[in-house]
Each structure stands twice: as C-alpha cells, then as structure tokens.
Image (cartoon, rainbow, N blue to C red; front, top):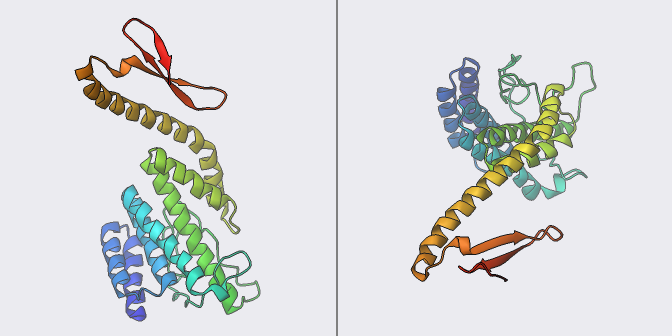
Length: 262
C-alpha cells in the first residue's frame, strides 16, 4: 500500500512540476486513498502537496482545509508516539522517510520527502548540506516532520490571508506568529512571515469592523420587524460604549425624547 501510494505521489509531483495542477491534485487524492490511515507523516506530506495545488488554482477554502488536515495528522504523532517526542514536544516518530526523486527546481519536489515547493517559495527547512555530518535516523525523522509542519503552516497561512474575512485573517495572524518562532525557516519564508505580521493586523481590524457593521445592520433589520407592531423601532434603542470598561449599555429613547439606561 505504501509503495503504491509513493509511486502515485511521484506521478503527482511530476504533474505539479509541469503546471498541471488539476491532474496533480487528482493523483494526490489517489495517493491518499492508497496510504494507510495510521501513517500520519506520509499522509501529511500528501496533504501538504494538495494544499499547494489548491493555492496554485486559488482555491483558498480547500487549501485551508487540507493544510489543516496535514497539521492535525502531524499532531496525531504526538499522541500515538508520546515516548518519541523531544523536549519541545515535536514528535520524533518512527514514520519512514519518503523516497528521493532527484534534484528539485524552484517549483519541483523536495528530494528529501517528495514535498513540493510552492512557486516562488524557498524550502521551509532545507536539508543539511552534504558536507555536514550525517544525522541519526531519529534526528532525520524529526527534521522531516518539522519541515512538513512548517510547509503546511505556511500554506494554510497564505490561504487564510488570500481568502480574507475576519476569521481567516485572524487565523493567518496566528499561523504567521507560530511560524516566526519556528527554527530553520528559510530566508525567503522568514521575509514573508515578517511582512505578513506587519500587514495583517490592520487588515484584520478592518475586516472585523466591516463584519460587525454588517451584523448590526442585519440585527437592526430583524429588530425593526419585531418592534414594528408595537410602534417602535431599533432607533428607540441606543448602544452606548463605556470607554473605561469597553462594555456597552442600552439606552431607550421614547418618542418624547427621554431616555432610560438599562
């Protein structure tokens, strides 16, 4: 099953590298079907690749979902192999590393784990140069897991930022904050993280204010419909913010102009 999944994934990587993202996505889905559910790392690699495909065709919602699945799967390694976690809580699971596929281009597959590199992005956590001492199997596995975790998080963060909306933008902020603390982040990715951490707060605030305004508009319309039989409208009620506490109080203004706080 794993060998079949790896073979299909290699086909998908080639399709991705050629720019055929729709067919690459279909083959990644086939690879997922062939990959046993208990192989959380291998499935996370495929799911991270699928997220990259969704990003290429601007399917933000789908990219968010599948990248989240990849991150959740890596999180399962902490639960299934608690004795193999390092001191920082990152798993050192016994999942096998993926087969090598050759040297990647800027948008090709990562030769260490068959993880594709999104267009214009650098490796999240590059493999060590050949001149460096060989790592132990546990260290290699730990590095592989951290690399995929970082890539999936980068892809989800970008998808959330592109999708927009208060919830997505707030989530993107959280993702980029988490990425800013991760070791081994590539220079290009680090610049992206820093740029987004500056750009997102005002976007998030603007989205929040817009959605709150829209929500109040809908509530006003609903309230007017309920109050109309009583000769009232929401204009008779005023929400007054207490600048000291941040809370709100409601004032009722009668037709004669008097008001009452509640």
